[in-house]
Length: 151
Image (cartoon, rainbow, N blue to C red; front, side):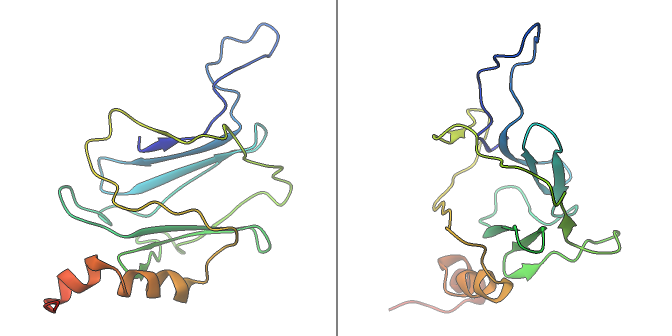
C-alpha cells in the first residue's frame, strides 16, 4: 500500500471492522499494476492500471483521474493512457450514486512502501488526459528517458 485516507475510527454498533470504509487507498500490486479503492461506505470501486504498467526500482509518473461528471476513473502512467490490456476498455465507471469518499483529512503514507515519492499532487478538478500526458512530458522522468541533456 502507498497511501490510505480511510477513516480509522469505526463508531458502528457491534462492528469489529478497523475502517469505516469511507476514503481512498492506492497500492502497487505484485503484478506491476497500480490499484485504487474509492469507498463511500456503500458502493466501493476497485480498479487497477493493468498488469506490468510499472516496474520496480524505476521512476514513474502516475496520474489517476476521477471525474465525477461522467463517473469515470482513468490511469495515465508515464504519459500513456492505460487502455485496459486484456480488458475491453481501460476506464472504470463508478456508481452514479456514489456519495463521497472523503476520509481522514491527513493522508497516511504506508510504512511498508519501499519506494520514494518525489512529488504528490491533488488537483481541485479532474485533469484532461492531455494535461496528464503534458505533465509527464515536462517532468524530469520524460527528459531522462529521452536522453536529452540539461544545461
